[in-house]
Length: 93
Image (tube, rainbow, N blue to C red):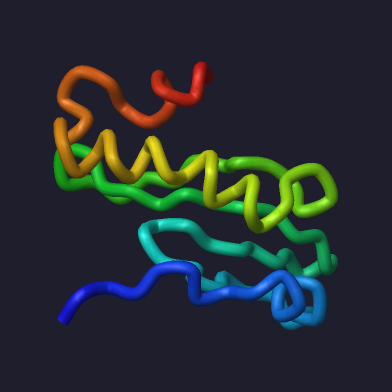
């Protein structure tokens, strides 16, 4: 069964208040802290170790922008396994 993507909607993101992580698919997550701040995370695995990369706060990065930022990272990981270009390098960080 294929993994779904684009599970979140802009309205659902705006309304969600409960702290936790909410998957959009393809490694992209909305993270809500206990204080209520919202940010975007891209989760991936490199050399068998789980890693996370912040893509920005919701106030600065919209759902569409987060998907656009995660897209090349998802494609890069699937094609190269990040052997030569891990996500942080691809992001410029």
